[in-house]
Picture (cartoon, helix red, strand yellow):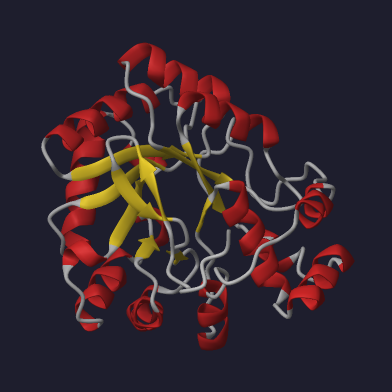
Length: 280
């Protein structure tokens, strides 16, 4: 059901950590602009910000929390350990560097950014995450861009299941099989590039549904994600779009509309292949 108050619902991550289902992504926002843009998002009502070491803008996110005048426990912060920091000691150092840049004592969610199977160090990295969580430096631990085989290996070798897998997911690349695997394992699916970098916004199916509801195509696609049960992290630097992306809790898509969007799946990635990606 839609949420007439417009308040962002939360999902419960493994360990009873609540995560706002809609957050604000800062991928490709220049470091010098991040503090201003993220502050704008927080003032608009976002309470979940997703950054990463690789984005080079963690310091701006930390500045935004202070600039918005919010207490630390009011904002859910995700960051990620990049490919060069795989390994137990390296991952431990990487987290502490991120905490210093963010000017916070803990992150709410820490993700292994890519599995990098060619290095074969993601299990070692995961063991560091488990210990860092036990130390209280991370509330929930997860992964990003992991395939089923990578997930199963982590669980088999450590006994600890990721709370989240953040993956490319949008109407043209819906990852139904991976989402089923997540559901079976109790892993929350988080979608990056949720609007396919704008590629689905002029699709006649999406624009038709948007007209029907008096919403923008972007709002329709974000609503689709929400109703699937995904966590979703749209990114924008445009003030109007930042506010629009948050305004998706006062309407529902029908079963027929959900099915029409499901039929857009073309199986095509925009981003890199997780089995081979090492660095940009």
